[in-house]
Amino acid sequence: MCSYIRSSDVNVLKILIKNIKELVQVDDGTRIKVTGKDMAQLPTLKDAWLSVEDGKISDYGSMSDWNGVEDWTGLEVIDATDKLVLPSWCDSHTHLIFAGSREAEFVDRIKGLSYEEIAARGGGILNSAKKLQDTSEEELIKQTQVRLDEIASMGTGAVEIKSGYGLSTDAELKILRVAKKLKESSDLTIKSTFLGAHAIPAEYKDNRDGYLDLIVEEMLPIIKEEGLAEYIDVFCETNYFTVAEMERVMEAGTAHGLKPKVHVNQFTSIGGIEAAVRHKALSVDHLEIMEDKDIEAIVGSETMPTMLPSCSFFLSIPFGPARSLIERGLPVALATDYNPGSTPSGNIPFVLSLACIKMRMTPEEAINAVTLNSAYAMDLSETHGSIAKGKVANLFITKEVPSYAYIPYSFGSNLVDTVILKGEIKSTNGKV
Image (cartoon, rainbow, N blue to C red; front, side):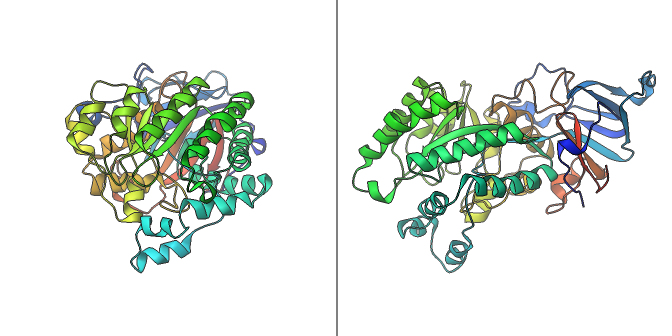
């Protein structure tokens, strides 16, 4: 079992990984996403080596072409015989900052209540908002750090974190301030998203416009002033926010320097995708319910369709039609949706398994979806998501496995042996 090591505990300037069975997702750094039939192609290099210096991938190649090392000063050598090396997963949709859990609602669903019925009784997002409002920044940082360590141990090296479990000015800002502090201290690369329009708070039940005014006129100016987020998000869905309300929030967010990344088509198709694409959203996320017009709206756009199969698994709702999008020549990204209500897990390898088993994605397509395409969904594909010279050295070494297809095949297993983030070894089979 891997033990996670803080950056202050390790001081390796250079790393050489040799005898790599297969180096996965290699490129020249010019690709920013993978689309359509190209998603079935996953470039690799067998019997390889890779070097890291100053936090970046400095070079890689075949062992047959390796000329040895001239300067061994400050060099850590790792023998990866019978092991694979991959770029760290990029998780482009999470709600990682939350207070407490909601296993009681899990039991309610087992007994027959739907997600919507639980929300109507004051559960769901409103339940998490109440817990978060009563939790200090210090406690939120402590809880979230545990989750960050957990996902890092499973191969994740970059993560987007949304607000949305505050639903008041103070609580939404608290979440984003926690995210900002974690950005500064974490070994993972973190992007943050303002999702004040996640649900209507109980006190605004009869005054929806009043809550939207609060988001637009009070929250957004502070978020811009303090530099608390890169993206603006809205839960555009029946019984949550309408397309017109989503457009108002997106326009206000854009005016405050935030790029749209939105929740759409989780339960119903109400026109949110078309609106999001018109507003040049970086990604449209969930997509469990897709009609032909929804797919057509994305064709030719720069918007990344992002699917969240572990949410479908946990809520027993449809899985997104990844095959239909790929066959139309579109890209697909995958993410966890890690949150306390609909996906209490940040396990990307399990997401890969679900994508292959339930969505009929090939291992190559699924790995492309959680590396380069999910990096694109965070504006990170120029620095993350593939093995390329000059990219950030966020990568991991597997245990001894027969092939990369074994990762989604062996569902539920953590096959990560060594984690390297920003060029530093963070864990390696309990040893450093």
